[in-house]
Image 1 (cartoon, protein in one colour):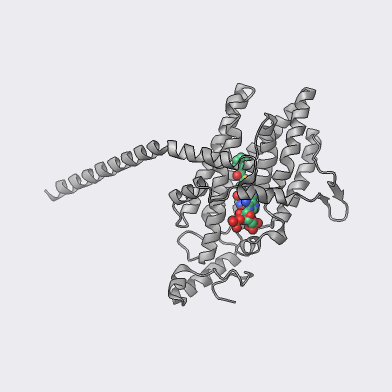
Image 2: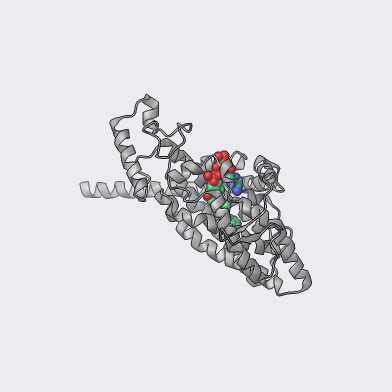
Length: 351
Ligand code: FAQ
């Protein structure tokens, strides 16, 4: 095994080398010390911080996952943003606006965490608006009914919590710390979604039907948010060895299903899976096969809304150019004023 691979890594992902070492071909003494310290941090469940030595592949994996996560939050504002003007009451509108604003905030923490790894925000934005970057498959589904605001909160935020609570212990400090705040807000998001569905289920027949029809559409895509089955997940093993991910995609999916069943009973909705059944032996709910061809089609850009989601983000980015320019001009002006004041103060001292 190459010394620059973390324990348990697949040898074929030989990219686990520090940049400096890779450029000269041979690891330096500093790299070797850095690696030993890195492995110690991982093994002792301590945090890796931005100034610590880390393998280049660890850095790359983090940038990939954190930037995809940030993009998901930003694109994820659209399906619900679509309902802000049509929310059924002032109270619902205020809650939905607050939730969508939280998602913008999550995106910003996550972009900041990715920036600590040396990838600048403009590069990440560029990757998103040119369609090169991935974001969660779930946000390529449409939201034709108000009940979809309930399903997104209950199912999508519910899946996000199951996936993200373990990420609070991610080995990379800035990511884990960002996740703590994000998870607190996601818990509120999930409850508000549950409460929308509960209100509809306690309403008229038409409202109950609307809630059930929405759950029928969102259930399977929400289960796919955890990523492909473990045997088809190229990144899980390495990410778990590095303690970025703490559980496999299938383990988290199972937790999610186990969590949903009793909540669905309280709501009075039926989860759309005829194979869903409690297994006395395992103590978990067995569930039916998911249609993974749909997942891969969405990833390829052929989901219901891929084109419109990226186009909207690109337009928003371009329309906001003047704000970025104004902010930059203001910052330059402030910096010039501070420099002039410092110069004047120095001159006074010298006089
Ligand atoms: N969608 O080897 P793995 C939210 C890709 S929650 C699209 O298993 P990994 C809150 C994967 O990137 C949603 N692509 O990958 C909210 C990889 O491709 P790559 C965001 C997916 O990284 C709620 C390939 O498939 N949450 O935003 C998906 O070990 C409501 C092979 O997969 C996070 O991002 C997918 N669902 O595991 C906001 C959580 N799944 O990069 C608004 C952090 C997999 O090699 C409204 N991320 N792929 O080209 C993670 O935990 C992981 O990255 C996984 C994927 C679990 C998503």
